[in-house]
Image 1: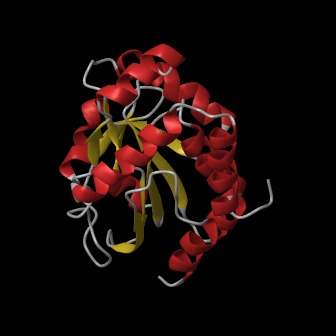
Image 2: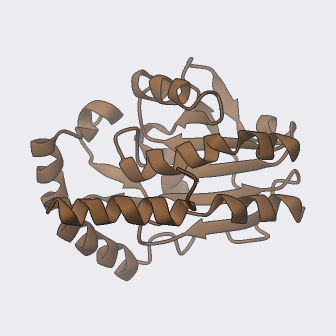
Length: 215
């Protein structure tokens, strides 16, 4: 648990391979499709203004980007859902660093396309270290060019093995956001970002903290 985030994620990926999970090869194919499709190429770059959002928190309250930034800098993490082990590993690491973020006046927000019935338990499990917001139908992620279709093969695997996106998201689109992290300064501009086709890789907490300290 004290290892760098990259090591934790790599360990989980290795465990999937050792268990001969049918997801491994399909995930590799999906990553290649994402790379060829240049998904995320149009997402906000360092120095760009982070586009505004108005999203639901687990209690049903609308939360605006501007209101969050009024209290300090922000870490905006796009995540696939509560069912995704890569996402929960990342969010657990972010929640564990809540004191470091608080010392810098920063807050962490996770944006995912799930209904409040699923975001509320996730947020509670993170001990208040992360605010989880619902991006219904991936509308905000779509506006940033961060959405992918899982593909028929992964859809069939998910239906057979348990993660039912249609239930979690309240639609039958089987679209997911490409996990990405944006460190946003008080002025609303992006200080640093991590947008990577391989969704099994995430931005290290130390790199997020370094960006926040550079503001």
